[in-house]
Structures are given as C-alpha cells and as structure tokens.
Image (cartoon, rainbow, N blue to C red; front, side, top):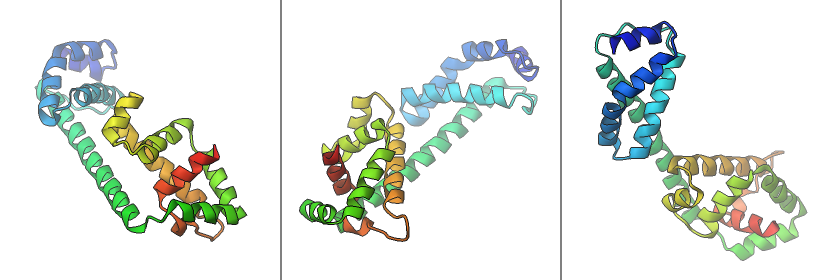
Length: 200
C-alpha cells in the first residue's frame, strides 16, 4: 500500500479507495476497541481519509501506512472524546445550575403576561430557533427525555443533540440579554422553553 500512499501524495483520487479497501477493517476494529462505538469508528475513518486528502500536499513520506493511519484514527478519536467530555461537563453544570435557580412556572407566566417587553423578547427568541432546535428542546425539557433517547427518536448522533441544544440555549440567552437589560434571572431555560412552546 506504499504505492497507494505515493498516489495520494501525487493527488490521485484513486488512492483513497485503495487505502479504504486495504485498511478499513483494521482501522474500524481499532476504532471500536478505543471507543466501543461502531458508528463513531466508521465516521472517524471517513473523516480521517477526507482530512488526508485535504492535506495531501503537506503529508510526509510514510514507510508504514497502516501504522500511520491507526495513529491518525487514535488522535481523531481522542480529540472527539475529549470534546464530548467537555460538552457533557458543560451540560452537567447547566443542569445543576437550573436546579439551583428554577422558579415556578406560574411566576414566569405572570411575569411574561405583565411585561410586554419580556413577552416580545420571548417571541423574538422563539423565531430565531430552527424547527429542529425547537423539537430537541421540547423533547429535552418538555418531555424530559435524556440525550440518548432524543438521538434515537430524531435519528441523529448524541453529539448532534448536545450541539444543537447548546446552540439553541446560546441563542435564547443572547436574545434575552440585549440592550443592557437581562431578563434571564426570572427563569431557568427549561421553564423558558416550556413557556415558549405555549406561544406557538
């Protein structure tokens, strides 16, 4: 497969299929051994090969292609798992924070009904979210589903659920903290989502 590597360095697309055919099983088994996750291992192989193609002009000469590819797989998976841990830590911190600051739904409803500016901001924030983000928020905070369940229901990865919910919460907080006035102290995000869904 050193020939395939030289083909890659020379910019020949056929090298990608040769490398895939020769090393997929080894890379896949190694990825599953590291993560225990077959889907992630498969996704990682595809991404590594795409990365190699993008960087083909700066890649080194390699004597042991298999060892080099396994090293790439390990680095990619380790980086992704580290990013997952950071995301989970952020979400755990968020969940802990919401338990400490949660207020009654009735209080939020009264606040929004008596404050036109707050209600307008809630509606504006709602309009900023994509339909998929609203659906994920509804499943997480209205139906109290965990991230694994949501990933299964929506046919997406758990990582996608994390990222989408995180981005949606950032949008909500940004919309509700403009013009120097911060209304977010009135409620937790879960209650906010619950109320916003009643506006639809």
